[in-house]
Length: 165
Image (cartoon, rainbow, N blue to C red; front, side, top):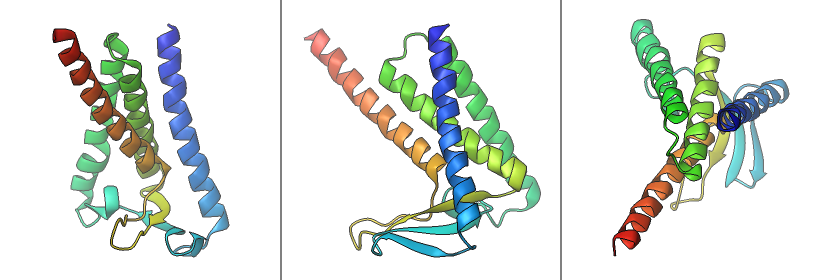
């Protein structure tokens, strides 16, 4: 029971931070307005994304958008929620990672259902070293969760190897 409450709170926390950040951006920015945070390396720019990550799929017809941007993500998120609730053997890092992925995913699906588009506003440009598209807190949650899962898998394999020796 405590575990399920932890899961629900962590997912809700990810959704809440994302939704609050989007409300703040929409209330304080004009569309396409740019506000430098750290020179031109880290800026905020308010845009609306009708597609998926980095605008992919924004030119699909409405039926395909419904399937690929709403129905499939909702089914996958539902399955992942079911999986983490039923799988009591997940390590803490994996559990937190899945909650971040689910929270971010739900937040963006919610935007697509309610607004028909997703609010994005972060942009990082470190010159030739690293450059992103414009993204949001939900995208950051999903990406962070994926990185955590990778680390969890690496540490899990390392631990199993050490135990076998």
